[in-house]
Length: 143
Image 1 (cartoon, helix red, strand yellow):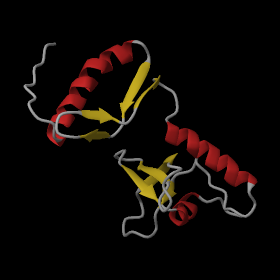
Image 2 (tube, rainbow, N blue to C red):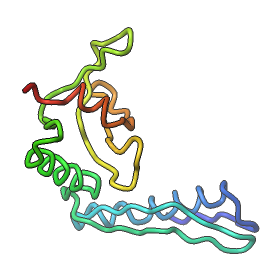
Image 3 (cartoon, rainbow, N blue to C red):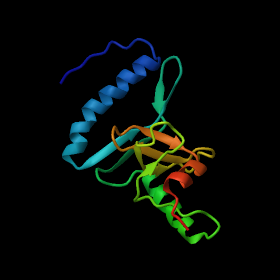
Image 4 (tube, helix red, strand yellow):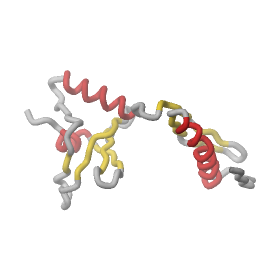
């Protein structure tokens, strides 16, 4: 596959095109070798740009957010002053009109102070961030 973009300037649109080129080129090689890759955010100036991260991992390995989620749940089980979170159950948010939508815990961002939890809509796969209080209501174990 030969693709030619005549890139003459660096802007968010061209960075997006280059990101797609890299993804298209490497994804086949990565899949053939049971690997996956992730590109971080991009920073740029007038004539160059760089991605802040390039992570290669085994295809079925846990993401950093999933690893952190496991650590946080284990820590909360040991700490008697924190409400224990059950990551195996589906949560329903009673705060909205349609409380029949099911969510599951999929990750934890340790650097996020206000909304560190990542929850995912079971039906459509859309991910959302959530606060401690919301996750404790939705996924907290009854005492």
